[in-house]
Length: 116
Image (cartoon, rainbow, N blue to C red; front, side, top):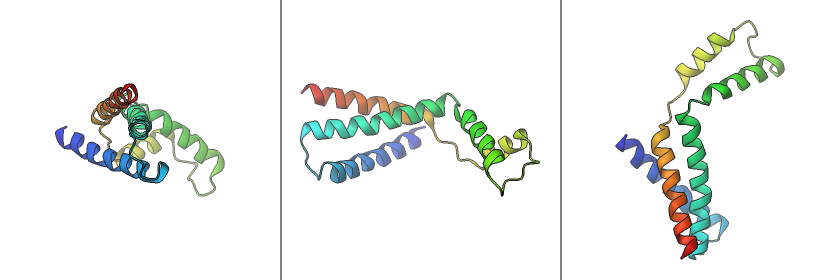
């Protein structure tokens, strides 16, 4: 869990820096830093929440439905159970708890900076 936390922290901090330099043109005002932390923190919060609650199953269901209805290359004889098992086997598990915690921390820091 510590490794996942550190990895997510480094990745998200680099995303915040990229966001600051692209969206705010590198202007390091506290308001801009607060905004960047809030935006990235919000995404991290919801991604962690989705991962923690196993809501991924819903997205697998949507993906299966759209593929059976609209894709010509998809094997329509494949059952949902088989497709779901294949998706779970091929997916990489994202650690939701560290992502959720980092999202909450970014939002809290953003709130603190907005008040300063």
